[in-house]
Amino acid sequence: MEIAEEIHDQCGPLFGTSRVKAHRLSHGVALSDIVAQVKALYEVDGKPQPRLGETLLSAYESGYKRPGPEYLHYLCVVYRVEPDELGYQSSCICGQKHRTRASDLTGSAARHPGDLVTRAPGYVSEPSPDRLPGRPAMPVHDPPLVGTVVSGPGDRPVFSVSRPGGADRAGSPSIDVGEEDVVLRRTLLQLLAGAGVALDGQFLGAVDNLRRKMDDTLVRATVSPTMLDQWEETTLGYGRQYQATPSLRMLCDVLLDFSEVRRMCDRRQPVELQERLCRLAAQLSGLSGLIMINLGDHRLARSFFRTARTAADETGDRQLRAWVTVRESLVPMYYGDPREALHLARKAQDLAGRSPGVAAAMAPAVEARALGMLALRGRSDAAPSARRALVRGRAVFEQLSAEQAGDLAFGFTDRQMAFYEGDTFTNLGDHKHGDEVLSRALTLYSPTDRVDRTLVRLDRATCQLHAGNPEGALQAGRDAILDLPAEHRSDILVHRARQIGAAVNAKFGQIPELAEFYEALSGPRVKSPTSGPAPTPAVDPSEQV
Image (cartoon, rainbow, N blue to C red; front, side):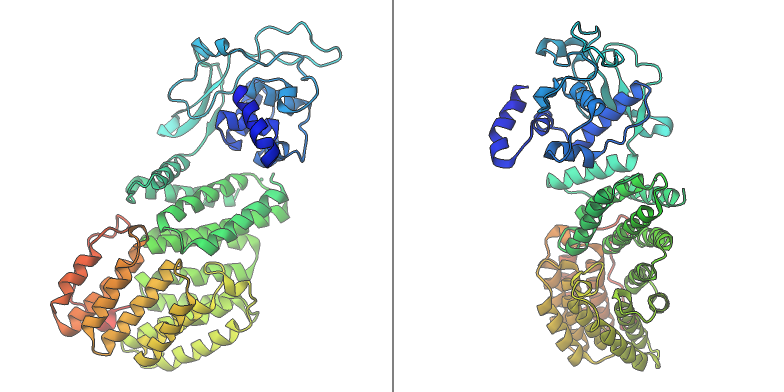
């Protein structure tokens, strides 16, 4: 109580911190914790779940809205205070006193060491003599509730609401928090603490299980338009920063929001809101697929794009479906068959139609890169088709809006277009022109656009290789990787660098610089457990990406 008053006195004049917010901050809990405790009390009372959510509770704390009598009552119960101490000059609907002395918090009401959240207090056990006339009597509760994560059916973690100091109340509610959330939050906390985190089977299993849940909920919902606005802004923010943030850290952030969107999809929404939720699901799932490409897990990348297609189909938006398809083409582009990448790129163009859009500009550029790779493997008709595709892509790109041309994930930027053009020219054997275009692309990228910027540098190293300078190619590739912080050395970048080493080995043999090159690549990196130690195979250079 004293801490809450101190927070209000110190922060109220400076930041407008309300009394109700000060009480939450004094407990050190999030909005979601308070919402969960209020809902748990509703279940104990045998009432239908309230429509109280984080957005509404935030509005109370900001002063935009005032809680009704019933919500105010439950907030008083949770915080163990009276309405005036929360900043509301009125009596509680129950007519009881909620404030508890410190001595009442000892003994059986003390918090268990394993509890995840602060306990949700109950009411005093005896009715107060000063019950207000005309007020309905509220039910009298047992001692305070304590929320704990326990093992549920099939060893699934659930949030159990129980009563300390005795047996659990019969029929006490359990709220499924999801094993995936537990794993993702633990990984995120380890990353924030600076601990090294490797992708293991438990983490990847949780990631895939979360995606499967979204698949389930898409085919089986009440959320405010304001909340959706916030989620859409958050998703676009991820698109702007996903290359600047370490892949594993970004994956945790994206999937935690993906989990929230899945929960919002759990019930059918009004048509206009359901469509927006499905769009969010498609974008977050597609972004997760892009991150999984960076981390080197091809199977999960394809699975996320499949989920994104399912969600995009629900919206009926052909441009969104085309975006998912063209982004999916990058999986075989980097790790599979360029013929499949070519097929997906052309499919994306069919979906995009004649309307200028992100996919309509990016798909021909991906087609050109795939044809360039096929030309490198000896397909004679690929080179002229690749050049024509670049012309089509550049023509559509010039028609994009500033917003569409400013986002690396959900748009298609000038620096990406230059990167794709330079990569195509390099594969077509026009190394001088390719290096010029790649050099221009490098000036357009921000130092924080680490993935694409490093891929451009590796492509320039390939230009040196084809120009007959294997030592320069190895040095350029080595520098491109070593200039990255360890947490940004994702599988896609090391994989691409190793391809350069393999091409040098195939064309010039085991030159002395190769050993130093591979030793540099064996340093710390973020990788998938499915990508074992990379060998130094003697691969024909025509087979390189």
